[in-house]
Image 1: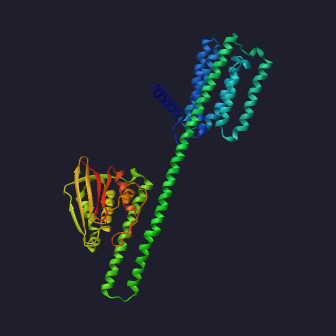
Image 2: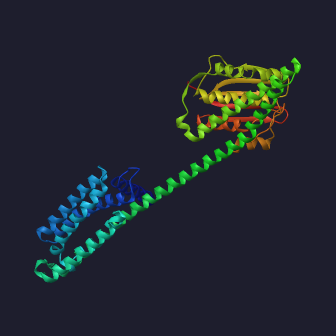
Length: 439
């Protein structure tokens, strides 16, 4: 319980620092340090004014910290909300050093705590100022501190001494404590920004690796599975256009050409959709709506009428006419098309493919069952759990990329559903697609 409380408090502290430093994505580390310094410094100065009042310091020692704190808050406002970081930083230097110089004489001179504040200010401003200002600022700081020592040496009566050693010790301790708190707050802010950048870089690296894998996969598929049917298509067209062949043979060649075109087009459609998913992300492409499932299945089935008739396949559909699903039309169309293509590809001539759907709880379960070659348990496990595309030739040596089923699984899951596969070697396979129901 104690750790939960500590975690709760730390989260609030991190949120506080995150707010005061700003949430702009283009916020620089220097701007963050300045915002933290101004805000925390103003708080510390207000507390210091209260402390000076408790030890009965002169009125100027109470008023000056309040004036400096108010000035810091004004500069913080322009830096944090108006985006004028450099202007605010440059204006704050002479202001803070002037008011601090007055505090030097009010607060015990070289025996007081102002020297510690000046060293902290130097480190902070050196960290936040652009490199071109470093030499000028360093000279300004050295001259300012040296001037204070010279003035105190020549005019010791200007310095208001402490009323006693107790007050001096308390002032030193409180000032050092506040300086440590201020530096700690700034370092925590720097660490938080560093961790955020590390996470951002890690995420960018992961995205780049994913895009690189996608590029390699697409190049591999294009080089092997797109170039090959195009080369075959070119050869067939050359035979048809340059040779005097019988009508029966030319009809066969034209059928082969149409088959190659269909396979290549389906592959390219799958590749384009998959690439769009990988590049744009799910939020950019999913547009869900109510869809009459049987109408879409009928539309997609018509695209495969020639392939199914060539293999003399019996295609039956027992989907209720009024059954609706809640899904993205493009995704559902691609899933149905890939599952039908897969069933036709792996079913022997004279086989049967059955399409069925029924409502189960919050889902509509759409199934594609074939009497084809089936899938071995080892390969089925690879299909379900692997992120790699596994290509296998069909019963008529049909080619494929192996990407279709992987894409179906990915799309279905991103749409809130799931894909389940049951298969027995040499007896057939059934794909179950769980699609959200609108009712």
